[in-house]
Image 1 (cartoon, rainbow, N blue to C red):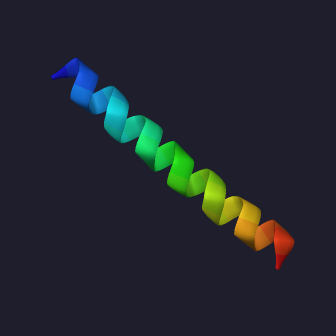
Image 2 (tube, helix red, strand yellow; image 1 turned 90 degrees about the vertical axis):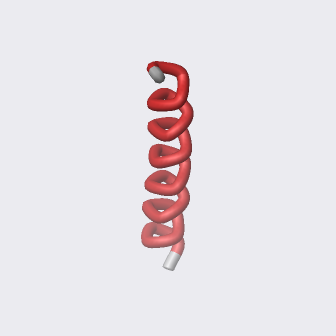
Amino acid sequence: MAEKAIVLMKQFVAIASATLWNLLIY
């Protein structure tokens, strides 16, 4: 259960980071 939560967190952080970079670039 904990491992699944960690994976979801990493995916969420990755998506958030990509979104922030796109906002900064444009």
